[in-house]
Length: 142
Image (cartoon, rainbow, N blue to C red):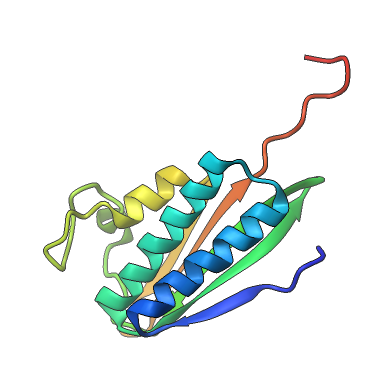
């Protein structure tokens, strides 16, 4: 990979937009189209807002990734907040502990190709979400 990961501390509203800008920059450099770049930006927006709402402080790291000759982007959100007691429940549409719509984590999971969450009450939460560039059709093939 040619680019170092970009990490942004999330502690203020302005940090949200800096993190989204990092995601836009990396996804554009990788060659994602407008639709996928928007998906990535929304995922970062949701993850950063969750950090502010639930943990008050954390970080977002955006990095280029590669697996089996396929390139993509990974967004990692981490915090030392209260943690999530039931991650299955937290991934259910409409569930919220902060009187929001409860669409953040489930939405990120739908927008991205891969989604992982690790959380421990009293320790914090780490979310990793990946989006892969579509594989190109082989020349002359279908």
